[in-house]
Amino acid sequence: MFENYVDVIEASKILDVHPETVKRLIREGKLAATKFGNKWIMERDRLQLFANTYDGKRGRSRTLL
Image (cartoon, rainbow, N blue to C red; front, top):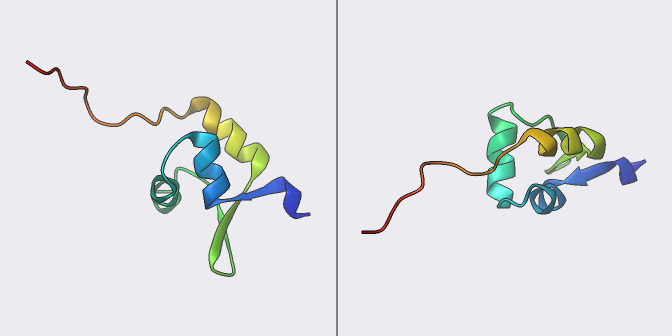
């Protein structure tokens, strides 16, 4: 049953972002998740769909002079 679900740590590895970024995406409603006890879990398939469209880069790049 739980092999189809991932927690925040696993999701952060799949998305290549910090675990706090995954929690922020959940809070903002951009990533669907369910609270299970004191952990957030999400369906592996839905996370893969999200990962295919997610670009983890934020902000603008800077040029050093």
